[in-house]
Image (cartoon, rainbow, N blue to C red; front, side):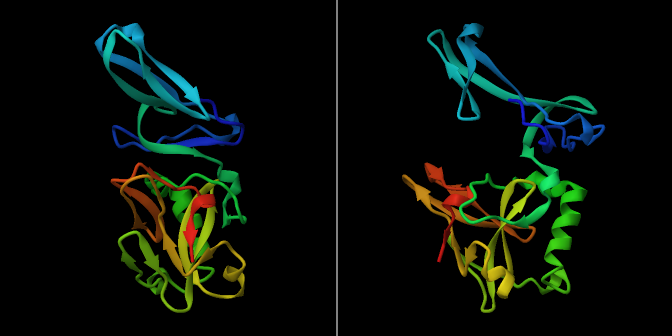
Length: 218
């Protein structure tokens, strides 16, 4: 997978190292997907791309197949534990109505530049991060306290749901007072809160809708 110019792969390796690059001027980035047959003919397990995603396809003669992803950073080739493509020049802003973005990933908030910009954004609405109120999460829904609302942010081209005071600015941003996680198929999706942002995670659900276009607000 090769990213368009301006995108970079942020994430953490299986050795718990953040992927670092010599500089942003080189542009783009790529992820190498390797499919290895662990039981049977090595040639009968291969990567196939569909809609920007790459999966391993097992053919007759291979009984099991393992998939790994790696990127090239300043430390050489590193295997991916968690990460994704981002566009740093987008910064952090309110998402646009109907914008279809993938969710933020947990290791994104391990990068100092992301933490610094996200903190600066929140402090435009709070005097300190200690002012951010606790939210009651009931199974697959979270309810904002009175005077606050959930808003959709665009963080480096990724969706984040954050809680902000309900003022004239945030009222025009996509969001609402209740944030829930819809599930397609069997099971449930649960609301998860990490570092002041909210995401959906599977709870026995076939497909847990995560992009901002599919978010369920009141």
